[in-house]
Amino acid sequence: MPQGRRKQRPRWPTAVLALLAIISFAAPAADQVLRVSTDDAWQIAWLKEHFDVWSRERESGAWLVRLDEADIAQLDALQIPYVVDIARAAELCRPVELTGLAGEGDDFIAGFPCYRTVPKTHADLAALAAAHPDLAAWRDIGDSWRKTGGTGGFDLFALVLANSLNGRQKSPFVIIAAMHARQYATAKLAARFAEQLVNGYGTDPDITWLLDFTEIHIVAQLHPDGRVIAEQKVTRLKRKNDDADFCAADTVNRGIDLNRNSSVLWGGGSTSACSQTFRGPAPASEPETQAIEAYLGSVFPDQRPGAPDDLGIPAPAAAEGLFILLHSFGELVLFPWEQTPINSANQTGLRTLGRKLAFFNGYQACQDCLGTASGTAVDFAYGEFGVVAALDSTLLPLGRSLLFATGTDAGGSGVPAAFLLGPGADFQRWI
Image (tube, rainbow, N blue to C red; front, side, top):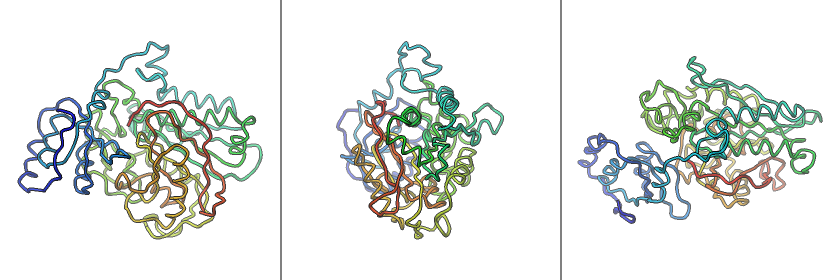
């Protein structure tokens, strides 16, 4: 497929739509990455339902979509405009080459020696807590899908960081990484953030202040079942958890998208079991979702009156807490509501905080620039507890980090302030 090939904005012939069921049974072919240029809401929803939509380019507005080469015929049939991204397709299909570093494939992901495996991440953070008991605690917060079913699996852990000796009341901050298994950079960033905080306490004044006045909860590997699959060469595009009751025969595509499975504003994700955004059979159907929702309930007080899915009720100006869900690689800071383009009652404060965070690293702060998404963890945190600084951050491909903490916003927006603590590692682009 030549670079630069484009199609015109579609009309929607009913007869063409009927052909899609036939076209979709074409034999699998090589993966392709397309840059799809459309603002049509129907087209965007259709792409998300049927294919692997990665992100949206900030400047061009094009959607990055992975699909089999044979599936391009479906876009042609609907006259959806696209360009083949040759460079990204080549990167996607390149062989993973071992670097020869000691421990690769055991402690670090083969071909990506900057990224720790699930066991290595857990071991390092548990050791950090054991070595610094006055600053860190290692908590078991639940079980993965496979562990609940007795087919292997993992415990789910949170690392809690705070000065436990000063007796001060502390504001809560929760950061969750690796909700989507293939997003390698997020778990690494969360672990590095923890290590920077512990190692800098007592010498770095900002870090010392943070741990004296803030209780920071870091879940570096939210669903390790899927992550260990994504750490393997042939299944590195695994995104969802590994619930084998859905799309069981397909290792990469089986499971539930945990960021469509939350119990607040659930129901708008895909109903197709093999879709990358499959919402699951019911709200909070997955043990990972249940574990993180229960854990958030143990950390955050309920500060927002009314029903969690009442879109018009604000959290009070005095509400405390910060919740950040890390993704890659969109260069975005997203804030509630994610399920709808309707502004939340705390829109001004959320937008202010999002812009403050985005200022430090050149990201874009927005509510629905990736379209809407139902059943997200960010909407749960805001809707259920009134965490007015509930944010969904998508990382930059390379070079700049998101390292946040909380305090009091002198601007009077009613949300915690945010500070950039320092540079992180360079991160390979992964989605």
